[in-house]
Length: 456
Image (cartoon, rainbow, N blue to C red; front, side, top):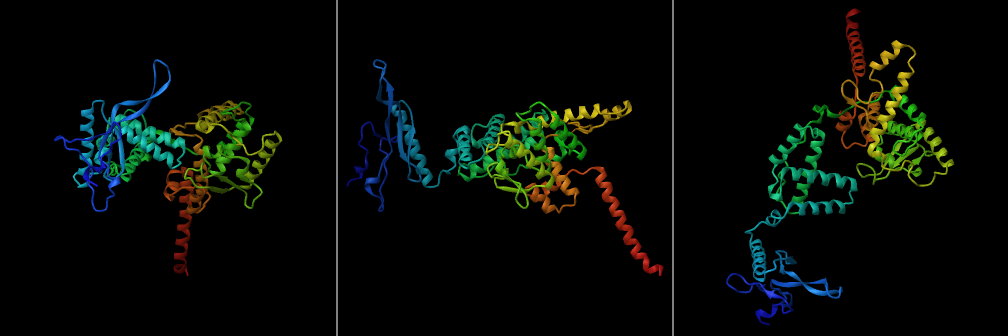
């Protein structure tokens, strides 16, 4: 078989010619099957169009020429070219030339990706996240932040991604009070995750944002949570139980049991919203509540113990719900209320404060209560109470109860002990004074023991 035997002879296929007019064709080696040899060709792609005369769909040919060639990994590639035949041949010849240069190492494999519009990479990255079965809400949030950052930095291709550009854009947004340090870190994490994927997928040689570090959110007072005291929690739950209106499609009794569940288990709002009667094993030893892996933040099934008092209240609540013909496997607290859980809690908190102020016995007591921060959603120091404050309170109370740090970390379901002890533990001056008092007592005991021998 001659060297020309590999030519494609199908209709509307033309061999690509270089500038000198010689055809670009594959050259067989000793291990190549001649039937598999294919040269780069252009062709008209079959398409279906509607006949304006009859209105019927008829088979036609594309306006543009298409090119067929084999890449550096010997995979067949088909790409759209141009309407003009000569231009299409020149474009395909450039594709072939790039493949040959890649084979001898003159072009890096990432060079082709660097020239693509960055929107194509973002679309591929989104498909990758969906293939990992990530939560749709997380994907939308991460990709949305990524697109906002890339558009703000005016990056058109991935080769334009620079650490200085990202850092400057984030700084300008913080200075404009568009967001705080915590949100700035979220945008940076989204961008770095995207660049890490580009490197793993062979689209970038290295992550240009690798050295950028997250900011210390402890110095940002934009959103400092505070923990409800036991008195505040009791008044909040009582106000919810007395409420006759619905918030987030939930009755007052529903909100009250949700607050109890969050305060005594540390469960997040979205985790609670996913629960059904089967989530609770109230007759087990010990009684437990289960969070399915698809709703847990760290994507693992969580089984948490329940306190006796909470277990008793849950048993009563579920029994009343079953009597109301609302049993079964449907969600106990359905809907998207968890997205506005903070606002819902703050409205119940305001109702609790109003009732507390009204309950003052004397004008002087009323004046004192009005000046107090008790049951305020934002106190004088700017600290905020929202639904997640219940989780903070759960962890703080564990620490104050002298629970071992590793046990507190396990109940909080945190990846590190630092997160449990630093971010989620809130200690007041009273706690510090009590700790110093214990130390003083210990010092006195030690001094007494040391002076005893001398007193003999």
